[in-house]
Length: 127
Image 1 (tube, rainbow, N blue to C red):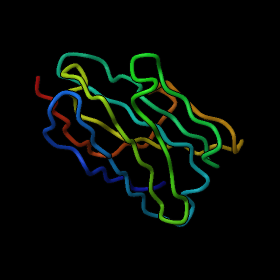
Image 2 (image 1 turned 135 degrees about the vertical axis):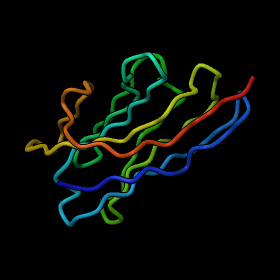
Image 3 (image 1 turned 60 degrees about the horizontal axis):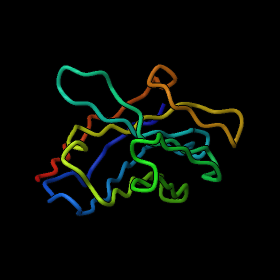
């Protein structure tokens, strides 16, 4: 099980950019598929990006496609979420999550697929 710590959140104006980072502990990071989710109070956790173990496959929902990019650096035990053209509706707590993946090209878009979560980082986009 890896331990996950997010960073990089903050306050940004609409149209701006932020890059979130998720640092993972442990020596088996490359065995895990990773995902980013977000949540606002009173709503369910929403999927925003996923990446396979190898980093070769990624997926975004339509709500963020073309604006958010997930990447990973297995040598640094880190996964990133580059967020561009931010909108006020992107305001949320952002979480990274991990799960073991036997297939190097598998990625997962459901929160139920992930058993391990970070503590979250707040992103606030002002209009």
